[in-house]
Amino acid sequence: MFEVKNHRWRKVKNGVMESLALGAAGLALVPLALVFYHVVKAGVSSLNWAFFTQLPKPTGEVGGGMANAIVGTFILLGEAAAIGVPVGVLGGVYLSEYGATRLNWWIRFGADILNGVPSIVWGVVVAGLLVVHRITLFGHVLLRRGNSALAGGLVLGLMMIPLVMRTTEEVLRLVPGGYREAALALGVARWRTTLQIVVRTALKGIVTGVLLALARVAGETAPLLFTSGVNLYWMRNLTQPVAALPVQIFSYAIAPYADWHRQAWAAALVLLVFVLLINVGVRVLTRDRFQQNR
Amino acid sequence: MNTIMIDRGEMDTGASPAEPPLSGQAPPSTPALQSLPPSSSTAPALSVKDLCVYFGPNQVLRSVSLEVPARAVTAIIGPSGCGKSTFLRSLNRMHDLVPSARVEGEVKLFGQDIYGPGVEAVLVRRRVGMVFQKSNPFPTMSVSDNVTVGLRLNGLRRRALLAERMEQSLVMAALWDEVKDRLNAPAISLSGGQQQRLCIARALAVQPEVLLMDEPASALDPLATAKIEDLILSLKKDYTIVIVTHNMQQAARVSDFTAFFYLGELIEYDTTSKIFTSPSQKRTEDYVTGRFG
Ligand SMILES: Nc1ncnc2c1ncn2[C@@H]1O[C@H](COP(=O)(O)OP(=O)(O)OP(=O)(O)O)[C@@H](O)[C@H]1O
Ligand SMILES: [Mg+2]
Image 1 (cartoon, each protein chain N blue to C red):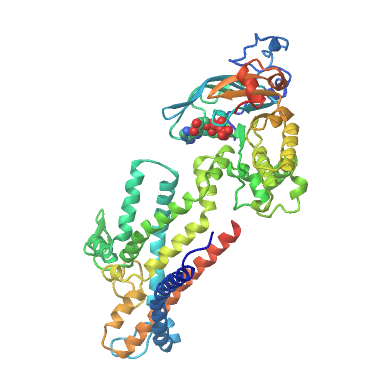
Image 2: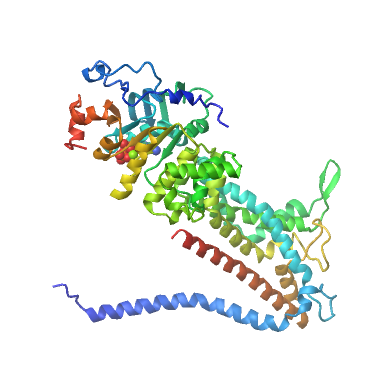
């Protein structure tokens, strides 16, 4: 009486659905494989020691490297983290721990919109604010007109804020209320409870969010084009333009020199490996967390 | 660090368990209470007067008045939803964290109104500790760090003192022998019963005067429950304990006084033996004999 009608037909349908789903999932991996194949194939042959240690050669000369752009990318990411991490984390703490008000709804809504703003728009806005003007304070020139590492770091940092804020809020919400109550019942002040118990408990999740946000902005090109600009030499201070790998890839790839194309591939490989390493780091962190909370 | 600390000598001369509590519902004029000596000579640890608690428009506690004697165990019983936890949490101002909660009335801790103007909830909670139904040791911390966390987050740095308090608290919580070889292990590697005793040790480490326990053993097996009960009995020589429990036998075993709550009201408050053998209220009798609730 429990026999299923058309048992075989059901099995066939099930099999078809399963293979379709598997096919779709597999299809998602195809672009990844393609990207890897191409970048590694073209990049590895162009990578050499000079790429990591030398400055770009003047137009027409063969050789040289992108040492300044590699360092520049780290400088920009450092600036971005300096802006994006404190503001993003504190904002996330506010959303999760304080004020259950309408304001929260608006902040969250705003952050979600900001996450969807195309990066080139960010670039144009910051360029309009910082790059086309001379920034002065009481007659002192703080930032001369033109591209600068400050402007580039600011764009990336601003882009990180909503990303970090939302992930921080999410992971803090996962911290059970019992831990907050336990700490408060020990006579621990609210802010200490928030920082040393709640944030501490969710720290791995927060770091994960920060790393993913860094990986996301590390490859941004459009907003840097108008802000950090191009620099073929070492940057001397943050008010000067600074070279960055994505921008360098862009300008080398559209240039008419085969040697520059090769270097663009090498830069693409370095950037890809960098982002990959961040993701591996995230995996290691989250796996560890799983084991601890088992 | 404890600016509203009242001289703990007051506790040493505190009421003995044999003395009766005062209750709005069971006034001292009842025959059973008359036979006991008056309590005016010693101060109760907590004296609650006309306590009303609201969550938004809902009144959850209705004008509750009772006195919790020092160095005794007072049990709070009553059917689910009658306001036992709400009552307990108003004794250390945990409702401050719930925006919709409103507390009216007076709760005096050794004579001082904890809801009075200028009283810091944080300082009240250092003197009135709490143990929760679901054990909640901090998962990122070791066994020993869990015990000392309250001291460390309140600014105590001296290692020797921390170690001393840690051992002392674990011994008091009857956990030291089981964990002394794994003090650096993660707290969440302990068993459920050990975790709950760790939470008790954590609460004891800040040296509160009163310990509130909200169904501390309801998630534990009989053996672990027995350990917690023994622990409660041994703690009452130094601490004033208020315990919420659903388990009638437990209330009878560990407590000196019992308060029966029903629908937000304190129905009866008396010595535990009186409540369980000859309660003056019909509803109390029905509840303790298992006829409802
Ligand atoms: N934070 C809150 N917000 C709104 N209502 C609440 C809140 N906490 C408790 N209540 C309400 O107050 C009433 C009493 O709750 P309380 O937790 O004190 O009951 P209890 O006697 O401890 O029950 P139990 O035995 O099930 O733990 C319940 O009706 C509950 O819904
Ligand atoms: Mg309860």
